[in-house]
Amino acid sequence: MTARPIGYYVHHHGAGHRARAEAIAAKLEWPVVLIGTGIGASGIDLPDDRPASGRFDGRDEAIGRPAALHYAPLDHAGVRTRVARIAAWIADQQPALMVVDVSVEVAMLTRLASVPTICLRLNGERNDGPHLEAFRSAVAILAPFHEALDTPATPPWVRDKTRYFPGITAAPAAEPAVDNRVLAVFGRGGAPGDGERLAAAARACPEWDWRVIGPASFPANIPSNLEFAGWVEAPECEIARAAVVVGGAGDGLVCAVMAADRPFVCVPEERPFAEQWATADGLHAMGAAIVLPDWPHGEQWPALLGRALALSSQVRRGLHDANGAQKAAAWLTTLALGATICREHAA
Image (tube, rainbow, N blue to C red; front, side, top):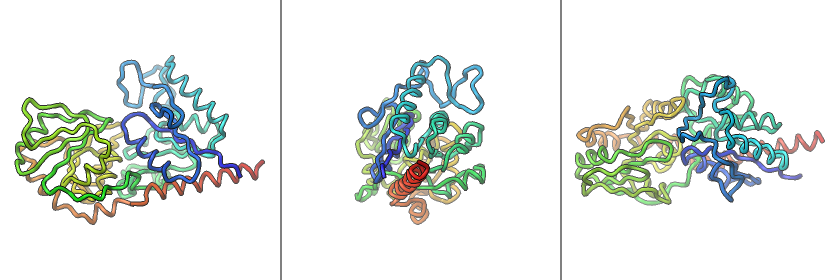
């Protein structure tokens, strides 16, 4: 039996999509090819499809855009080349499956190319026409979060088609927490951290050491208990050393914090389809995080950190599966094997 590859499309907005793809690919006992912008020699590299303005929220305002699509700009050379490369690879390699993380347009292209498609579904109210049609076109849906965090607005038939795999993240580092360290985390997908707000928080908590990873502006005066580390190679190690983690509600960070079992102050960022707010609402309802609508004033931080430390560790552990990536890989392998057997029998 010939193992036709699994294609894995990786969206290029933010770092979480690729980290998730690499975590699953590392556990797959089946050939897998990553496809996306910035993949480079690791797979099939695609040209950028973002508009010349650089502003990108996943949708366009093109006149006459079909209601089943989010992003179909007219006369965009990058989009044309992307479609051609994906279609050419499918025709040449005849993949057993395509995993799409995430793009309605790539999911539809894959289905049109007669390939069984697995749609990765992020949290949020994705009940618009394009999302629902992409989910309908898929043979199955993969959700990289715990079922308990799913938004109540998700249609029952979408839930029924979904397999939930929390824990798709790098293994937590086996390092003890530093008793008085707050770790503030900012990623590629949103706005950088506000240095002045961070400085105000640090000044209000002189007994705590604040460390910031990811992009952030610098304040005019940096308190002695505030450190800006920028991008780091192993954020899981930084999270393990933190007594409290502060950050948004992206799947990657939430998963890593639950995996490390660290108290969490969550300030959701604005994302299409209220993605981060859906996850944050679930965390709040379960008592897994302190959730705030905006960055607090400096004087509020001492009490907030105390509340975070009082959160239940048991709830956090219940939202994590240490074998999440392994289970997702095993599921995809089973689907790929089934698709291959069906094809060979049909032949």
